[in-house]
Amino acid sequence: MKNVLKEKLANGGKPIGTFFELGSPSVVEALGRTGLDFVILDNEHGPFEAESTRDFIRAAENSGLCPLARVRESSRPAVLKLLDIGAQGLIIPDVHNVEQVKELISYAKYAPVGKRGFCPSRKDGWGFDESAAQSVAGQMEYWNHETLLIPQCETLGALEHIEEIVSLDGVDGIFIGPFDLSISMGIPGQFDKPEFQAALRRVLDACHAAGKFCIYFTVNAAAVPEGFRQGFDTLAYSLDASVLIQAYRDILSGIRAAL
Image 1 (cartoon, rainbow, N blue to C red):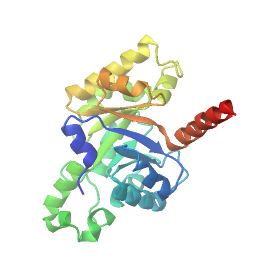
Image 2: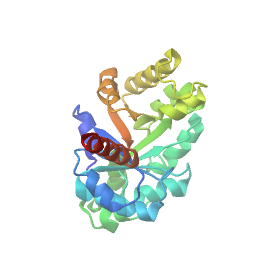
Image 3: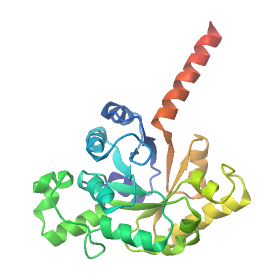
Image 4: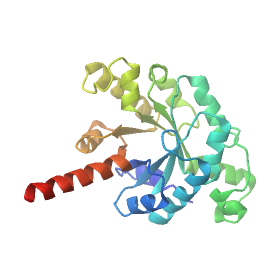
């Protein structure tokens, strides 16, 4: 498995993804025909668990999408299962402090970076893929490199400790959740406020100073190119259900206006 998102970021690409909430492999396959680079399989807010997520990962792989997954909670089983079924990166919500991130690294990364449990699984063809032909130490190094651990900055605690969090060995990047971050700051949804823009700049600067990437989420398509101009490395645009609803609304509005 080659992590195409990581590869595109390393080559200076501008990857764009979306959140997956609808819970059907066919939807993932359809998203793979759109030109998106990655999909975030949302185990936090979506109505599915690891067993279903495996099928969504397979659909993403077959469609040319990099499958990321947002975990349901910051626990060892939630992290380990999604990695073992083939998620190429994990987004971790509700992060508050450095110790919590250190614990997440211990779950998600093999030794010597962390303490991830070693077992052949779907990710490596149950020990029969090319990646499994290496020594155990070689396999651990490979998967530590190819799987991404991405804490979310969506709380005041994460924001206040962002420089230390992003500098940790085992953290590959940061995902900014603007809605919950603005709520934590007491300015819900007020993304133009100077203090919110300063918070974005702080996270972005911390990521780049540490040599890590920064992902931003937006529901505004016009904000995607603007986000890249601001320096974000990749953008996650909206979620599948919202885009579907809006597309049909726009189409039907145009049809009815023409009647």
